[in-house]
Amino acid sequence: MRLWIRSPLAVMAENAAGGLVVEDGRIVELVAGTQPAGPVDEVFDGSRHVVIPGLVNAHHHFYQTLTRAHPQAINKELFPWLQALYPLWGGHLNRDTFRIGVRLALVELLMSGCTTASDHLFVFGRDMADAVDIEAEEARALGMRVALTRGAINMGTSSGGIADERLIQDYDAVLSDCERVLGAYHDRSDGAMTTVALAPCAPFNVTRQLMIDTAEMADKHDCRLHTHLGETHDEDEFCLSKYGMRPLDYLEDVGWMTDRVWMAHGIHFNDEEIARIGKCGMGVCHCPTSNMVLASGQCRTKELEAAGAVVGLGVDGSASNDNSNLMESVRHALMLGRLTYGAAAVSHLDALGWATEGSARLLGRTDIGAIAPGKQADLAMFTLDELRFSGAGDPLAALVLCGAHRADRVMVGGEWRVLDGVPLGVDLDALRRDHAAAAARFLHAA
Image (cartoon, rainbow, N blue to C red; front, top):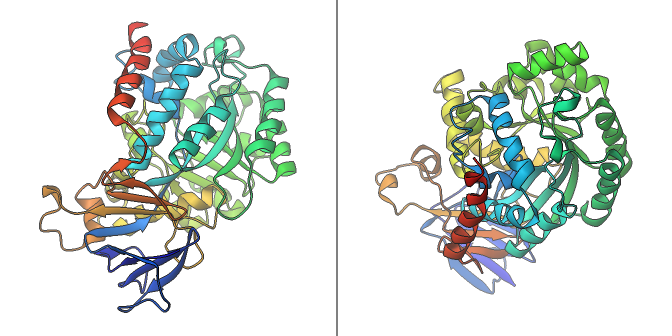
């Protein structure tokens, strides 16, 4: 069936004033004039909608919805924040609480216009051997694309790290499950609903050998690599003390300086390091909201792009953000960028580009992230009917400057997944009730 989304209020594409045509899950035509080139089976009047590519979230920790604004963790920087929360996750995260935390994060993302989400999963409770499978199931139920990153922690407090020992997994079990997950979910085809990356957590809670072994496995299976790097000065000091080198030098030492790699945060790189990152074609997921909440610093997005690095956008964990709204993070990226570089240096289109095509490139995908013929029909559609938008002259700019946060319609692969602001098949009241009950276990543990 050919669907014509006709004459949108605005569309984030060139020569598409008349809208776009979707067929078999793809965008097949941008309509420059008043009629498509060929016949259509159905017409959707888009005159109330601003249409952008489905947002792509390149870094998150879904389970952290369970510990948002936790009294033990608020008003702290990263290391003290982690030291407050690791014991709670180690003591109370199980497959049931994990599932509801994942579900809520995905629903929040979808409602904000996100169609593809990457979760950096490195925390596994004792009964959570199938945690990656749970994420795949929950994404499938909502009709979202997901990049499943099989991470790990294997260096706890007894080994000089900061993670709770109850979250440490057996080394051979980690590598075995990485192989299993790659075999089950890593789909390299165009339009894939699931892909897999390997993602040891960070230099301060995984061993050097795990970094080396996952890099070799990624090369074998042609998959991406992901980790936290360059987030805080505490991390710099840890790497200098334990490894005798800065974080990026450590990354090179373990074989990770390749274009397979995207890093979360990437704040504290110097000029020489940025040049090396760009030369390798590596990527950085900018997490502006989390970086401001934890006072970690400001990612040097413009310098990274100028050097040749890929920049995308992520919400980060919903305990350091503290929500899963990627459209809100687009606005924060714009504001933080302007504070860093000046009002004329970062535009709303830059910020939207990081959250769409930039993030898609971080995940190794060329089939999503843009509105163009041949791309997957992943679309986020917003109305400007709220008071916050009244008087706005540029609809695309208004989404960012006036603070859009909830999509009216969302399409994934040509299928509507959100109608009138509500995800299909989701009882929002029941989800909130079930999630609050699960989260209460972590709160009462305090």
